[in-house]
Length: 107
Image (cartoon, rainbow, N blue to C red; front, side, top):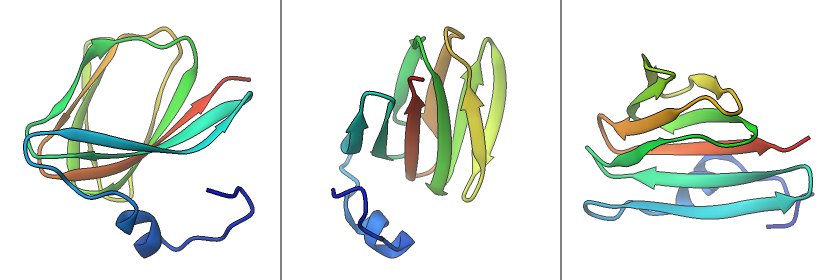
């Protein structure tokens, strides 16, 4: 995706379809300073606990997700944002089908 391209939420949502019992992703931007990735999680799908060396901003575009950061559970819904701090263990699980943007901030 060209970084100067304007895109509506509807166009963004159409870039990635849900897949049964799966998590799918599409990288939208990859720069030395960070990445932006669109994810689609089917209900009850997630990412097991892990950590990353950079802060990450999660924006929920559609649905409801449980995000655990350093053992603390957060319920995030359509329109919500949450920051997952660098090096803190975190895990994600979709309570409903979820589409989200993940912005990894490397510098």
